[in-house]
Length: 179
Image (cartoon, rainbow, N blue to C red; front, side, top):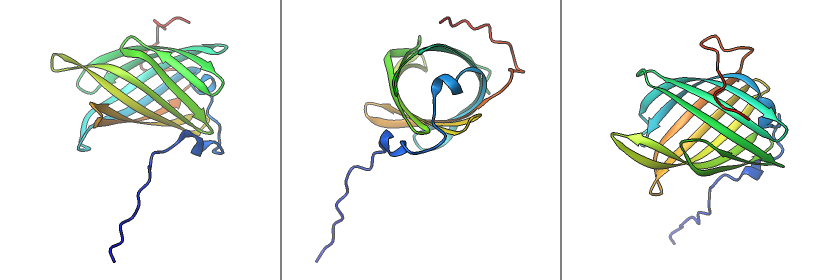
């Protein structure tokens, strides 16, 4: 007799984090100054880029902005301005290089955030789908893991550590983003 295991979907569901503490509230964690450090890996797992980011978050009720400035080790700088909106446990967002609208849901200490990013690659622009997971470790620290897909195939991953700081020693954000 040959035993063939029956494999069901192994996809992680946001509801699996419902009971996890501390509870992630984006308007609390992403309020004020934050500093981040991260890596980009290719589809084989090789680190292709490293970066640091300065982030300034501001909220007015259920609407917020994240002003992000990325500093890559190759000297490139990238700016992204997120416009965010909260409706219960659901979040939506837009940014200049995001195609359409990002959508996400929070449960417990986790956020699952999905969107399509316009990424310049060797003179062309690729549409990269991101499946982004954020996990609140404590009130000052968050881990972000994102898988990147093109044509349904995984083309890379981003790992990011974000921490709240009292100020940003690297630069003063001018908050080019407006609520």
